[in-house]
Length: 388
Image 1 (tube, one colour):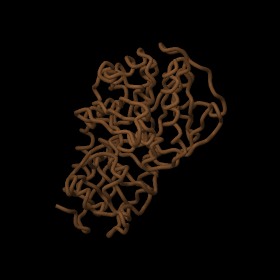
Image 2: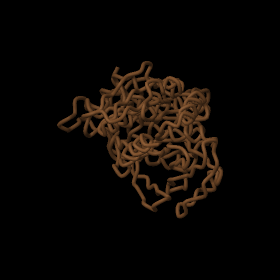
Image 3: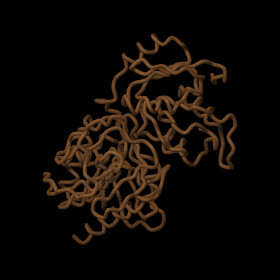
């Protein structure tokens, strides 16, 4: 049933802090990891991004739902979040592309939400205390009951979620115009826009399930392999790491984004760690350490790569220096990009192998287009392999 405007709802964090508001979306109870997104637009892309599986998303922008929901901007077949938290949902959407209200789509997907709470106070709490488990309920307003459910829920650290949101069967996204190259994409939670960005460059993309092997990815001799974004702890995705190592052994060009950056890092022998509250939004500054250029980028990640020069999150990478290359089983590599907000590693570039990755989202759905050129860089890597 749909949530009535007067139906009470309760949000309880695992440290006991509670917020009272009104039910939004489906009536029920949900538990997940509380994370916040700072984007003022792009809520439809956020809701349908498989990287948000298992998470209750708090939108810091106060007014959400003004443009409704359309049939073009979804990043997957449906809503992926475990729950949704907003301050002031629009009572009636207004946009020429709108087909339904946000509330109606949440209801149809069975997603429990809450509205009418101070989302900025909640965000400040998460920034101070870190991402944590949370429960949202419109079935009870008893804090102790919801808190007990939250404390019994699993943590995000150690969660293997990628295979659960991946495609079950291979499928092909055709190139737009003449086919220049063929790419095998390892779907760990891929967004719809990513194959589209490749297709715009004349690339035919064959999307493979998360547990595909290197042999499966390389069947048919693709010109390159793409490693997608996705949810969960990269330390659990040994199957993806082994597949990528097999691709690196074959010398095929590799490009990874977000979760794919962490998987490439692990394949190179690096470790990963959980960020205090992660990067989620569409306005994070990242510096290319080779050029000094700063790009405004879109992010959605709660884990990051720890490289030999700074494995401790309290010892950030220096943005004003390129950093020494480090050894891997595939030759030398470097941390290529750094977040200017906190010094987190945001990219890896292999110097002796045709592989690179970034921690952010160059497909810009939603977000800025500063990093769109990275798809062209992937094409250049494949062109170079043509003449190797």
